Length: 327
Image 1 (cartoon, rainbow, N blue to C red):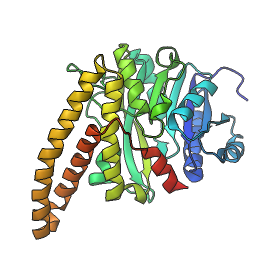
Image 2 (cartoon, rainbow, N blue to C red; image 1 turned 120 degrees about the vertical axis):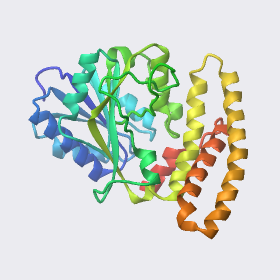
Image 3 (cartoon, helix red, strand yellow; image 1 turned 180 degrees about the vertical axis):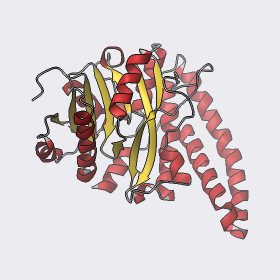
């Protein structure tokens, strides 16, 4: 066991991905030992079976403290909250069991937090297939987080006019416990089956004037299986993303009813206009499928997101469907 209190707690949430979990834990252990970092690793096991306990025991022999924490029922917000509760450092990193990180990632993220006095920092995120090939085309846009700006640049998870807006996610992030995790449940469990629990927390922190910065030189990878790169899955993700975007925006708004009506109206206009455009491109794609297929798919995703905005109050359980496919 670690003799001194760790400077960084690395929380890894997992659900029935034994190979991915082992891969990311080993990656972290290598960085911790190579860079002589004072860290602990918390594996928050969100699976009903508690499958990760044996994996943690097999890896807990490298001089790095790896702790298994059961965190059922299946709900990503529950997993993240249990991971925070089990951690002991003042700085918390979040990774998932479908990720790996480049060399020096942990050190770079920790140093940018200290150098900028930020409350939170997010890294680059690049999708790769299970065959170790880069993810390209329409799938890449759903899984990438790449911004052309210097490390330490303040970013906004919302729509602040004076700083760059970024699509935020907890995977590949670092946080100060004292300023970020002050609520009894930092991640709202009601978003735990649909997604959006991370965006909800980011918006909450922005409303409290916490500082969130970019660290693009720290590169993380998300390992994306073929089942998550198909048209049907991406369409589902676009629809769920539209719903979650409005739901978390409304929850964190000063005038939630007014904002709800605004986004439902925007969604309706986008649906009507996008539907007409989608129909026209569908006809053109019959004539020349090679030229118009990509545009047709892009419009279909936008149409799904617009419909999601209209129906945000009846959220689709995206994570439950994903987990069902992985069982």
